[in-house]
Length: 246
Picture 1 (cartoon, one colour):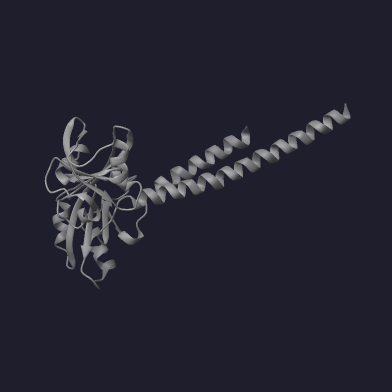
Picture 2 (spheres, rainbow, N blue to C red):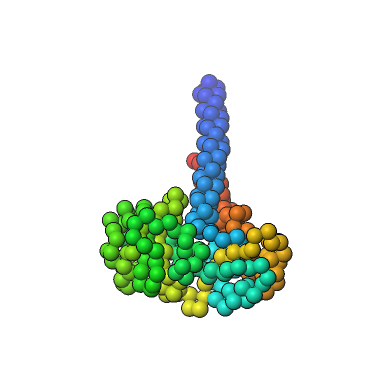
């Protein structure tokens, strides 16, 4: 009996240590995965200008809502050379459950980010340029029709950026993106270009002084929302705790 009890204790101790080890491994692995997803998602915005203006305290830029007229006010600030309003959202299209939709004015600096390798850039409404990965997944090519919520868009171009999530989506004219995202007279963001050698910190302060509900990030420093990263990290901890309890 004593030997049997001792063996049970040893077995229980081994299982406890094993559970803790699995939990720690889960935290490390899932934490790294969370950081990777957050970085990849942050890079998916495809910023081409110097500054990014979004709604303050928005959970993520997808949920950011700004009055489109704010862009005209930003444009009056000294050393601002261009203001590109944009819409960013995701939808399900065919076999692509997370099809990212980008909307900018045709010919804008922001639109130039999407490097067309086949066809041409978007120049009018009801046109779309799709990423290489999206084209492969949807089995689409130039001049095909892509339906978004039942509305037909002609594929005029295919782009490559080297960023996986970007290439799993498409770019349309701003007005079309506003319809898709249901943002009437609103946008998700403004990309702002500034004059070289200007005081960028002063420009940021002036933009933020326009409205308490906006926040400004340097494009070079931007990453996805800390709330997203915190949520993913929390998920990692949850899995780890379950592993320990099991």
